[in-house]
Length: 151
Image (tube, rainbow, N blue to C red; front, side, top):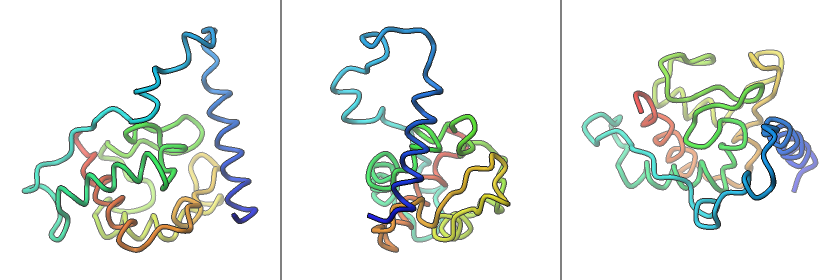
């Protein structure tokens, strides 16, 4: 693993831990084992609303990657709702670094966002720091992110 990936992951983990301090006990804060293992299902856009070439199966694969190996949820929150001070929400109509088209989302995932352009000051490394993602996996994640609009 690269030092950059580890540093970004550590900062994200520490930030997320710091954000959770609502005064609850460990028992109250810990999700049930089933909930922790699998994120809540998220409704995705019907196939008719997906961009050309994006299938519901791709969207489902992207959802799995977003919440898993892609580590997108670390900064963008479960189901893309955003995380204060880290990554913006992905399901609204406001796109900070692109026009929100499918191709632009693919490009954004591949290139990331440097700190100087980030609204939160937190970088988004290329591929979110998950350098092992294939081009097909990036396209699947982009399909999932695209499907979040209006969710």
